[in-house]
Image (cartoon, rainbow, N blue to C red):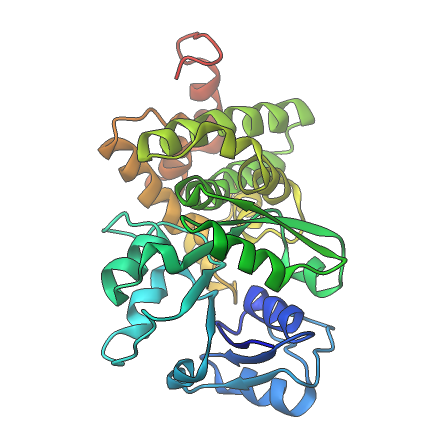
Length: 331
């Protein structure tokens, strides 16, 4: 039995903490006191994971220093809040196994999550594992069959995480491509916004299929330029996550796009959402990362222009469709 602290009391953090608490001692750190009290009193988190009864053994806390008692830390704090959560806390986690379940690229620094932890908390890359794949929290919590990948520079730690999380309903594969898993998990949220825009405009299956397929090419171009392996993007953290996020009713990023396509304003959409849609900020970060690596990213560019420059979505689609003709795999 391991002593585990899961960081983040949202839907994904709660679902992973509940899964792990079947076999291990788990403490869930949450920012909101109401969430902490509800978990400890009622074994529920109705704010972020509605109608799920949590294991009685799962407990919550607002004390970040409980990390000191942990053998393993699981991070689900949204990307843009990771650095600030630990700032000035004098908390040491460099001697622990760190498992990351969040997805995104930090705005401004353009760092992936592994790089944020390395820079801000001196995490050794060998002690870092990222889990990624098509895994909506709502379905994981309901024990619907799910498969993800655990990627690490350290194969032993990847296998440790595989063993830690695997259940009859939750299957874990291993990988040594941290960069690919992180890039795939980040950019799929941008592409999900684009997919939602297609839904909001009432366009068809042909359009959605074309988007998803060309999105893979965009993920590969950026990922390879950052050091990823191209075949990673055909796996769970690439195509698998992309497919589910672009199509699922659970996807917050797809919902943002759908509302944009229906004519809603971004500020109004964001203010009405309780949970974070990482793809909005990641659109900005991904586009700048692409420019840094001199990578062509036409879909991300059009999503950026729609979100932040007021470009009409139909004009964006027309511009994508009338670009210069190319070989399919021109990258």
